[in-house]
Amino acid sequence: MDLNLQAVGRASAVLLMAGCFLGLLGCGSDRGAGGTTTSQTPMFPPATVPLVKLSTDTFTNASSQHATEVEPDSFSLGPTIVAAFQVGRISSGGASDIGFALSTNAGLSWQNGFLPGLTSFQGLGTNAAVSDPAVVYDVAQGVWIISSLTISAAGLTQVVVSRSTDGGMSWANPIPVSQTPDPDKDWISCDNSATSPFYGHCYLEWDDVSQGNRIWMSTSADGGTSWSAAVNTAGAAGGIGGQPVVQPNGTVIVPFLGILPEIDAFSSSDGGASWTRPVKVSVANAHQVAGGLRADPLPSAEIDGAGKVYLVWQDCSFRASCASNDLLLSTSIDGANWTTPARIPIDAAGSAFDHFIPGVGVNPTTSGASAQLALAYYYYPQANCTASTCALYVGFISSSDGGSSWSAPTPIAGPMSLAWLPSTTSGVMVGDYIRTSFAAGKAFPVFALAKANLGTSFDEAVYTTQAGFDLLARQGTSDVEAQPPQNRAVRSWLRPRREVR
Image 1: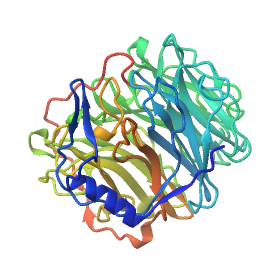
Image 2 (image 1 turned 90 degrees about the vertical axis):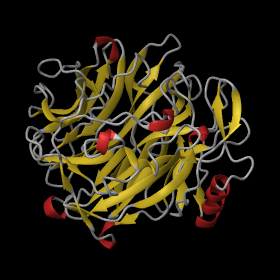
Image 3 (image 1 turned 135 degrees about the horizontal axis):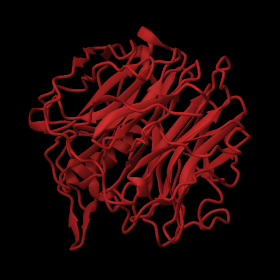
Image 4 (image 1 turned 180 degrees about the vertical axis):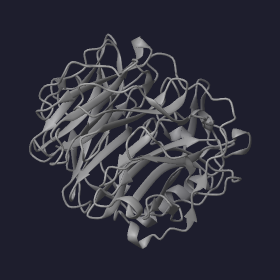
């Protein structure tokens, strides 16, 4: 296990970022078929929040772009936080392995390592790549579970789970789950309410690319050791990016991005034996993010202590000519009825900012009008930019009243040049999702952050904030705004086969 810990201090971060974006020589480049050119990213002030680097890509296989870590998910229980992420991104899809980072003391210290048995690069695995990690804790069985998507040398894919029974310190070899030809975008959740009739059930969701992105669900009642035969929703719905959340009464609600495209949700009230036909939450109307950055409008979902679901996604409906994205919020107490989407007021609707890839977290000890919401996201200060001029940041905003009002936003990382990010078949990448988790009452956003390339190598890793965010100290300042009529043409989100991983 790699126990390397690295705190990124305020002074060094400011000097590095400010130096690069003031145009100093050797601070990043644009990579393209024609060679290397100097970055033209304009000057923006650097974020100065102290950060902690959670892991480092130590792999050396030639198939990956080193050193890169992307697409983190996280989950917390009490003072323990576990994050999982791709390590060594491969341009054609997936990564060298899935890494994990563990804190047992609410972010005061971290340790990390790599999951065994997933690929040929770690722990005697046989696959060529692995992708799409999601992490959860099963309270009933006392086991941490990370789901992921393995990719063989022949391109065959499978949803698998890795288990830890010692608090996230070590992990067993993966257990196969999926029984469909070409799975994608897995996500996992467990029923951790002791009063639920389905306490201890865990639910895995994925879609299948070969079947028009048909959605599948599988259930485990023994901590991920065995899984039920996969089933579809009523009507065999198609979509991508489903994120199951489980209410205290045992109802499972799965918001996702539908094919039309629109934001939809389906549910189960019988422990995963059957799933309803999806209901529409909202039209999905997203602005295409500039610079060739991979940033699909996948939703981010969480649940409060009373079972209310909070759903956030990127959308351009409030912006003139759909020129950039806001982040919208809709909530539900039953999965069937959703509030009118509201604009989260990170900045003025007439600003030049573009917001995308949200990762919402909810303090599970709070609920209703006192629910604490924490939202991390990526953004450009200038939406109308190019691959050489876009300045990529990570931001944070919070609410202590269930989303009725929001704090002032805080830049927590950046600016980043897009030249510092690894390539994929659908654009350069920080990840299709990120996550925010609460520990000891503080919010810890987990995200990918890139620095200037080191020669031919990248310098992108997974980070979180050094101290977390105390939401009680961040008073709400701006009210949310009602959703305008959905009267613009929606945009297609589906990419060609295999480009979603």
